[in-house]
Length: 331
Image (cartoon, rainbow, N blue to C red; front, top):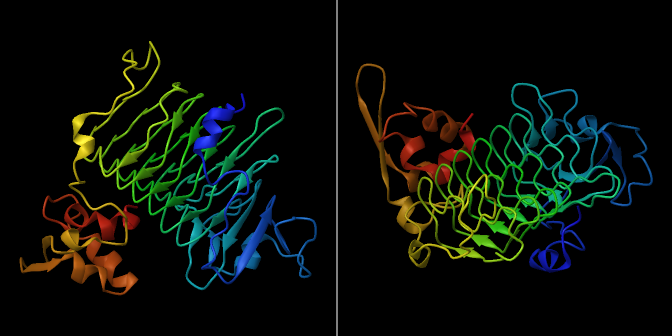
């Protein structure tokens, strides 16, 4: 089913899918091979695959990563986009079968089946997804099938966590731009799926299962979320229109949506209040190490990753206290 005209109007980034401008070296992937530009008409002179053309800066982790689709990925040094964990096909089929997808950059689409078939199409079914940037779609199945046979706008600093944004806007659904949002296990999963319509999402849906099934099968929902629905299970199934999955068809959001988010929103970019949050972990021997999210954010990536993994299940650990820094290292 193709998205309705009304639903597609919500997705500002579609109909000329955006390409981010910060990337200087772009690899144009079509069915696993590298092309000279976004017309996908001419192979690069070397005949390289996408993996070879990325030269370790993108499309890493498995032999079939970046196969089967049609999309652009950033190959700047250290970008790290389209990185399969456990060896299975991140970015497989993105924009494939005549679908549309913007540039993937900034360490995005990383994880087991992350971004698989996002923005993809098949005969009689259209699909589109905008640019994916800023450490978005990170985690096993993150953004898996997002915008397949449907439409999703630009995703920036969002969709971090296992199943985050998985199936969003799929099968005739439409979702606007997603920025600094949808962080947590199953956050925004199935959002606007099956003909549903959801507007832009900004600084919202931070927490496990936050915004799960929002706007599902509800083409009349169409609301945007700004600095709200933050917390575990917040706004779960709001505006969902399915007698089986969620019998309530009330399209209104709860009063909490008028407040400010209580958790940091954009992974890798702590806002002022979040930067002052303190964490603590113990080294071998029992010595306590303390710091702030702001100080952790300033450390080099390798050091950040090492610290973020310290006692990550403890309530005062860097992972728990500083998701704005540590969410990209969930694996």
